[in-house]
Image 1 (tube, rainbow, N blue to C red):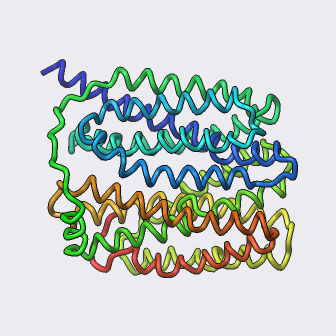
Image 2: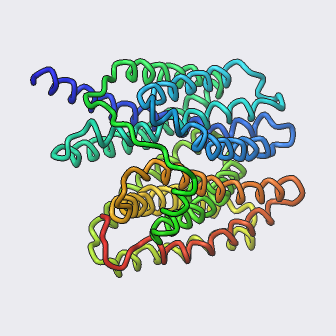
Length: 404
């Protein structure tokens, strides 16, 4: 019994540490990667980064379906393999010619494989390895530590990149990736995985046709990918910031500030218990979401507005709207409405496909504008995408259920 308790505690710590280490790498492979690709471009264009995003999310949609049998049979191996791909990804950043045409494609392949193989096994272990009596403490500890990392790491990385360069700082991220891989090798599941039979596509289609909530889930994911979750709008805000500041340190400061605002905004949201007040709280941010790109269209190259757009998108849209409200709603739909849990993994994979489709549609439009248009047209795309937040708000909060 004592050995089992120790194993549970060890696995819990490993799961927390894995998420914390992953969070410490996220800004390096997203925000600072964009700046690196823009700086090495002959025309200071974000084209390579947008191509990287399109390839990455397209592959993530494909991997969600192709890796499904592997997720079922070899859950631990899939999780560990994701961290191996992370190591390969950082090595490529350090060694490949960043100006080569193949660079964004190679990085995108490894990043898509890492993301696809990490999260589905991780969500499974969060359920099977953490007792219900300890789940709240586990989630709380993970959230606190990851938020601290999201505040500290952008500052540290911004300072180091400004002094040493992006590829040299990649060595630090490589060490973090290796630590994550070594931790995963120490992970030993305490519960034997019960295999669930795979379903035919016709059976899955019947399940979706039967459950209206599952169709709503796929629609929410589609809009989520188009508007708030790594969407073209979010990328546009990053481009505007990089055009308004000339140092990685500034980018790190504004990213850390965004994390602090996220903590405050989420705390206030979770204090609200009535659905009508929750909707009113979220609706209060919609004018800023729509008017900020319009303001930049009228006042182009305004650094204050560019910074405000970036901070708002990172904190309110990415942190509150997506990271808290949407994620909670999606989990509630799956747990409350999908009675046959054997369909859960297929629905999660299909929802990943819908999410990626929304992302790719918006990013392809952004790529077209960057290649054949100008910055003003890019902001018009952000304005059009912002209008989709209105139907999102109508779907994201239920009438009777509370998922706070």
